[in-house]
Image 1: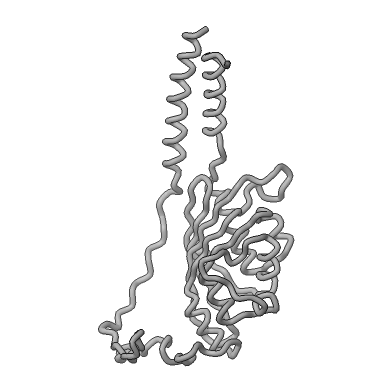
Image 2: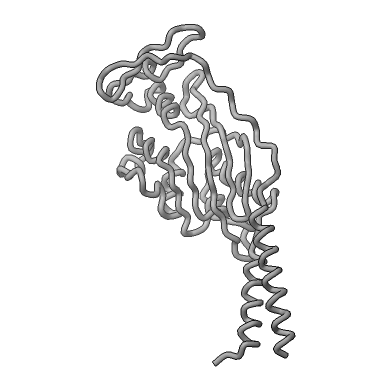
Length: 256
């Protein structure tokens, strides 16, 4: 049966290991965000291997909706994705799917992070080869883990949660002739912006009637995030571990 002294020593060691778990710096978090943006804008298998874990998983109902409604590439054409399931459940599936997509520009608008995750707001403006395509804005949350020694990057993306304006993206593809318009819609009708000062066209509702919007005002863009990266949870957690360890060490001295 282990002695009280040995139990205290083991507990202090375990608390120390937990308190020293990794915590992303601003620069490290930005590297994670940059890696993901580069994979969307200029994909390569080598970057995916260097920046993603082998058990990588990607959740995106937006991507799954686009794949189901307008498949591009042989891999997408062969499947129908359940909307609540992962879009890509393995690194190999992601590499096959992303590798068949046309590159797009990818602008990071904001980035914020915790110790183990990175979140970005982003925009793209060329999702289809047409004049003045509608911009698409999205949000991505990335969970990361430390990479093994010798890897090109110190942190790897384990899981992605990504959603964006799939309706604008799909309309761009429809106007480019890449996809057919969904049943009941045309490329220029229900989704098109109204001219300034004009009365918006009625839009269909689920029961077949039409409702005219009461306002033509456009919401302003949200302000850019200017606060510091969030590290409060890690700091308070470390302080708590330090206090507990001090008490246990005092007990250890008493037992000697």
